[in-house]
Image (cartoon, rainbow, N blue to C red; front, top):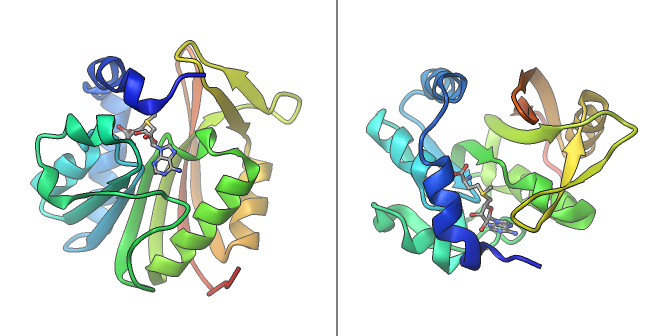
Length: 193
Ligand SMILES: C[S@@+](CC[C@H](N)C(=O)[O-])C[C@H]1O[C@@H](n2cnc3c(N)ncnc32)[C@H](O)[C@@H]1O
């Protein structure tokens, strides 16, 4: 079983360059949440944290992998922590960003991290996340780096969102050699686990 520390360098090298649709997603999010305090959940080596800070947001990141965080160019705003136990107080962020993390968490981890996302986000705040897309008949995929990833479709996202106090504002599918599902949520209610 792979772990993020052991594949950090390989992963960061492979994913450091964003594709045009990924750049557009980031710019459009930054525009929607202008002047906001943002948390990048599972920030990895901080690629997106840095991108948002350069666009004028104040963005912090958390990740549990020392190896991934160690590759960051701007360590000042990154904290080593799990997305399932976020070390920030209630409702302190205007917006949340979570790229390619939930799919590795498992069902309980997804549930805990969505509760934490709800807790640290202000009412009405936006939460963008990207997942791997898969239809109902296929819920998991084995990746070459050694992880099993969960797949999501719109139905699953609507169900998780409503259970965890969010409203789905937008979903998009980007088809490449794998298909990615991006989701924009709005916090509409407090939930307590
Ligand atoms: C595919 S990488 C994405 C990194 C970053 N979001 C990006 O797009 O560049 C997944 C990241 O999630 C982190 N991760 C996985 N499970 C986590 C957890 N429970 N708490 C915090 N970070 C986690 C890993 O350490 C890894 O850095």
